[in-house]
Amino acid sequence: MDEEAVRVAVGLRLGLDLFVPHECHCGSMVDARGVHSFVCKRAPDRTARHHALNDLIARGFASDGFQVTEESTGLFRSDGKRPDGLTLVPWHSGKALCWDVTVTCPLADSYVAGVACEAGSAAELAASRKEEKYAAIDDRYIFEPIAIVFGRLQYFSSPALN
Image (cartoon, rainbow, N blue to C red; front, side):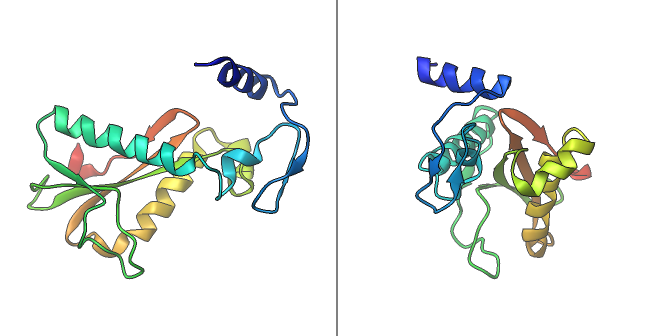
């Protein structure tokens, strides 16, 4: 890690002020702690991080000899969105496995109350939201949400995979 990454990581861990308060390009205010950059929908590194995580998962399957495709065409929900990856051969009971990666910030407004009461609730809520989004494809595929909270993998496995 470079010096800036270490500075930010240590500052976040210790709750220190990292930035001069300013307005984000999305229009929201960024406080001195800079937490907004982790939840901003327009953060520049957001897409790159998501693609890197998805690629890591796909390479993990490939290293075990499973052929996969990322963002498979033809596997759409009613709104046109699709999962991040799909096995090209049946995984279990004649169904292929598909997954969708999400990265959550426990400091986002939608997670703060739950995180204060129970550890891991941000990842669990994010995984539940993904399961709801892809409920319509359950009859044809096995869907697995993969929720990552600031570098800690929280994996939720269906009974079919155990």
